[in-house]
Image (cartoon, rainbow, N blue to C red; front, side):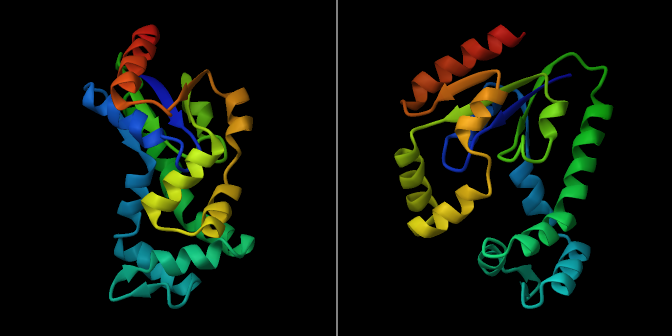
Length: 192
């Protein structure tokens, strides 16, 4: 299997590129979906409640509470990551082992691809990029967050300027969906 990483800072269009690949019939492994699955696991919720009292309400994680807690305290963010990332690392390694002899292209949709070292598993890395002001407006509108919240979230991620140097392909996502699709088709054709 040839694993292609799709990454980009929050609001840069990473998920849009991944969705195009999915609609073209390629397997897309979505780290965010895996994290959502973790948050519905009863054992995880029990550990979460132990580490972060008041973070679980009626059997569900209070993600807004957690976000406010961890984005204001680096040590708490690290503690939360210690609960989540071992599962994700295991899942990626398992995926690679299971598909090691298969000959096809698959995509790993991961915002923190470089930050968590998952780039080492990828044959090629595509970076979704967009102008900072557009990125900020997208996130504020999509997630209904303030400019300050956007800055807190964005500041824990490696800046796209740094990611550009580490990526093989950079896609400017400030264009209509049909043009992004044409661009992704050409990119994938070049990877086959």
